[in-house]
Length: 120
Image 1 (cartoon, rainbow, N blue to C red):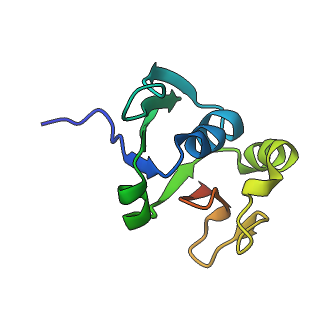
Image 2 (image 1 turned 45 degrees about the horizontal axis):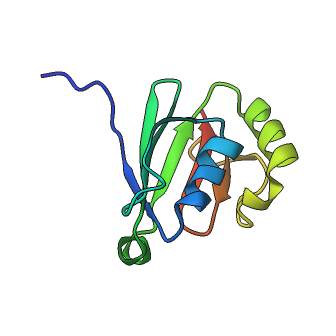
């Protein structure tokens, strides 16, 4: 048995918040777009990663996921995000920090989800 990738579902009260985080801030591209339907949904991806974004207020209020994106150049990611979308920097981890477990990390939040950017 072999798996190709894990594609999480993320629920937003307003799907535009997810698009701002993943597309505008992190550079993902929309591969499938049903944002103008009765049940707004889209698939975004980048570098072999995929995320399904849904607009569903009830589920959004029940789920506040946190994800980790691992990179080999955290400084490049930090420089780009902090210059273009500083409002997404998480107040508890807004700078690249060497963590006790040996990884460098900084974090983002859009009020619905948390994204930790990590380099080992």
